[in-house]
Image (cartoon, rainbow, N blue to C red; front, side, top):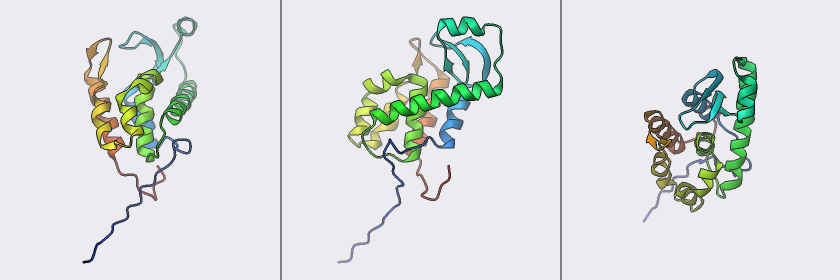
Length: 171
Protein backbone atom coordinates (compact mmCIF):
# COMPACT_ATOMS: atom_id res chain seq x y z
CA UNK A 1 0.00 0.00 0.00
CA UNK A 2 1.35 3.36 -1.01
CA UNK A 3 0.52 6.53 0.92
CA UNK A 4 0.94 9.92 -0.65
CA UNK A 5 1.96 12.69 1.68
CA UNK A 6 1.22 16.27 0.82
CA UNK A 7 3.31 18.82 2.66
CA UNK A 8 1.96 22.33 2.59
CA UNK A 9 4.05 25.29 3.49
CA UNK A 10 2.00 26.86 6.24
CA UNK A 11 4.33 29.81 6.84
CA UNK A 12 3.51 29.88 10.52
CA UNK A 13 5.04 32.29 12.96
CA UNK A 14 5.09 32.62 16.68
CA UNK A 15 2.95 35.64 17.61
CA UNK A 16 6.09 37.29 19.03
CA UNK A 17 7.59 37.13 15.52
CA UNK A 18 4.50 37.97 13.45
CA UNK A 19 4.03 41.27 11.68
CA UNK A 20 0.67 42.67 10.61
CA UNK A 21 0.33 42.10 6.85
CA UNK A 22 -0.75 44.91 4.54
CA UNK A 23 -4.06 43.14 3.82
CA UNK A 24 -4.92 43.49 7.50
CA UNK A 25 -3.94 47.16 7.78
CA UNK A 26 -5.99 47.86 4.63
CA UNK A 27 -8.95 46.01 6.18
CA UNK A 28 -8.71 48.04 9.40
CA UNK A 29 -8.50 51.34 7.56
CA UNK A 30 -11.38 50.43 5.22
CA UNK A 31 -13.74 49.54 8.05
CA UNK A 32 -12.66 52.25 10.47
CA UNK A 33 -12.97 54.93 7.79
CA UNK A 34 -10.93 58.12 7.67
CA UNK A 35 -12.32 61.08 9.63
CA UNK A 36 -9.60 63.65 10.43
CA UNK A 37 -11.77 65.49 12.97
CA UNK A 38 -13.01 64.29 16.35
CA UNK A 39 -16.30 62.35 16.20
CA UNK A 40 -18.22 60.03 18.52
CA UNK A 41 -18.19 56.39 17.35
CA UNK A 42 -21.29 54.11 17.52
CA UNK A 43 -20.22 52.88 20.97
CA UNK A 44 -20.04 56.48 22.25
CA UNK A 45 -16.25 56.96 22.31
CA UNK A 46 -14.48 60.13 21.07
CA UNK A 47 -12.50 59.04 18.03
CA UNK A 48 -10.38 60.53 15.24
CA UNK A 49 -8.72 59.45 11.97
CA UNK A 50 -8.84 55.65 11.46
CA UNK A 51 -10.54 54.73 14.72
CA UNK A 52 -8.02 56.21 17.15
CA UNK A 53 -9.75 56.46 20.52
CA UNK A 54 -9.25 59.65 22.48
CA UNK A 55 -9.64 60.62 26.09
CA UNK A 56 -12.17 63.39 26.76
CA UNK A 57 -9.26 65.79 27.38
CA UNK A 58 -7.65 64.86 24.04
CA UNK A 59 -10.99 65.27 22.26
CA UNK A 60 -11.46 68.73 23.80
CA UNK A 61 -7.93 69.76 22.78
CA UNK A 62 -8.58 68.69 19.17
CA UNK A 63 -12.11 70.11 18.90
CA UNK A 64 -12.50 72.08 15.68
CA UNK A 65 -9.14 70.98 14.27
CA UNK A 66 -8.60 68.62 11.35
CA UNK A 67 -5.56 66.41 11.70
CA UNK A 68 -3.24 66.03 8.72
CA UNK A 69 -2.93 62.67 6.95
CA UNK A 70 0.60 62.36 8.40
CA UNK A 71 -0.68 62.93 11.95
CA UNK A 72 -3.43 60.37 11.39
CA UNK A 73 -0.97 57.81 10.01
CA UNK A 74 1.25 58.29 13.08
CA UNK A 75 -1.71 57.73 15.40
CA UNK A 76 -2.79 54.68 13.38
CA UNK A 77 0.69 53.11 13.52
CA UNK A 78 0.85 53.68 17.30
CA UNK A 79 -2.58 52.07 17.74
CA UNK A 80 -1.66 49.19 15.42
CA UNK A 81 1.58 48.47 17.33
CA UNK A 82 -0.29 48.50 20.65
CA UNK A 83 -3.07 46.16 19.46
CA UNK A 84 -0.63 43.79 17.74
CA UNK A 85 1.28 43.66 21.03
CA UNK A 86 -1.90 42.66 22.87
CA UNK A 87 -2.45 39.84 20.36
CA UNK A 88 1.20 38.73 20.70
CA UNK A 89 0.81 38.44 24.48
CA UNK A 90 -2.57 36.67 24.39
CA UNK A 91 -1.99 34.04 21.69
CA UNK A 92 0.16 31.07 22.69
CA UNK A 93 0.25 29.10 19.43
CA UNK A 94 1.70 29.55 15.95
CA UNK A 95 -0.37 31.54 13.46
CA UNK A 96 -0.14 32.47 9.81
CA UNK A 97 0.51 36.16 9.24
CA UNK A 98 -3.07 36.51 7.93
CA UNK A 99 -4.46 34.93 11.10
CA UNK A 100 -2.35 37.32 13.16
CA UNK A 101 -3.55 40.25 11.05
CA UNK A 102 -7.21 39.26 11.35
CA UNK A 103 -6.86 39.02 15.13
CA UNK A 104 -5.12 42.38 15.27
CA UNK A 105 -7.98 43.95 13.28
CA UNK A 106 -10.53 42.34 15.61
CA UNK A 107 -8.65 43.59 18.67
CA UNK A 108 -8.15 47.05 17.16
CA UNK A 109 -11.93 47.34 16.93
CA UNK A 110 -13.05 45.50 20.07
CA UNK A 111 -10.19 45.96 22.51
CA UNK A 112 -7.85 43.70 24.43
CA UNK A 113 -10.30 43.11 27.27
CA UNK A 114 -12.77 41.51 24.88
CA UNK A 115 -9.96 39.47 23.31
CA UNK A 116 -8.78 38.14 26.67
CA UNK A 117 -12.33 37.20 27.76
CA UNK A 118 -13.38 35.70 24.43
CA UNK A 119 -14.21 32.11 23.64
CA UNK A 120 -12.44 32.86 20.36
CA UNK A 121 -9.08 33.21 22.14
CA UNK A 122 -9.63 29.94 24.00
CA UNK A 123 -10.35 28.21 20.66
CA UNK A 124 -7.20 29.70 19.11
CA UNK A 125 -4.97 28.65 22.00
CA UNK A 126 -6.50 25.15 21.85
CA UNK A 127 -5.58 25.15 18.11
CA UNK A 128 -9.23 24.78 17.12
CA UNK A 129 -8.77 27.21 14.23
CA UNK A 130 -11.77 25.91 12.29
CA UNK A 131 -14.04 27.35 15.04
CA UNK A 132 -12.46 30.82 15.04
CA UNK A 133 -14.39 32.40 12.12
CA UNK A 134 -17.71 31.62 13.81
CA UNK A 135 -16.44 33.05 17.09
CA UNK A 136 -15.20 36.20 15.34
CA UNK A 137 -18.56 36.80 13.69
CA UNK A 138 -20.43 36.72 17.00
CA UNK A 139 -18.98 40.13 17.92
CA UNK A 140 -21.18 42.32 15.72
CA UNK A 141 -22.80 44.71 18.21
CA UNK A 142 -22.03 48.21 19.47
CA UNK A 143 -24.06 49.94 22.14
CA UNK A 144 -26.24 46.81 22.34
CA UNK A 145 -27.26 47.04 18.67
CA UNK A 146 -26.30 44.70 15.84
CA UNK A 147 -24.61 46.87 13.21
CA UNK A 148 -24.35 45.95 9.53
CA UNK A 149 -20.87 47.50 9.35
CA UNK A 150 -19.68 45.20 12.14
CA UNK A 151 -21.32 42.17 10.51
CA UNK A 152 -19.39 42.97 7.32
CA UNK A 153 -16.13 43.67 9.18
CA UNK A 154 -16.31 40.41 11.15
CA UNK A 155 -16.98 38.52 7.90
CA UNK A 156 -13.93 40.16 6.29
CA UNK A 157 -11.78 39.32 9.33
CA UNK A 158 -13.03 35.72 9.27
CA UNK A 159 -12.15 35.43 5.56
CA UNK A 160 -8.67 36.83 6.23
CA UNK A 161 -8.20 34.42 9.16
CA UNK A 162 -9.00 31.49 6.84
CA UNK A 163 -6.99 32.76 3.86
CA UNK A 164 -3.93 30.64 3.02
CA UNK A 165 -0.71 32.57 3.38
CA UNK A 166 1.70 31.83 0.51
CA UNK A 167 5.26 31.20 1.69
CA UNK A 168 6.72 33.55 -0.89
CA UNK A 169 4.38 36.43 0.00
CA UNK A 170 5.77 39.87 0.66
CA UNK A 171 2.43 40.99 2.13
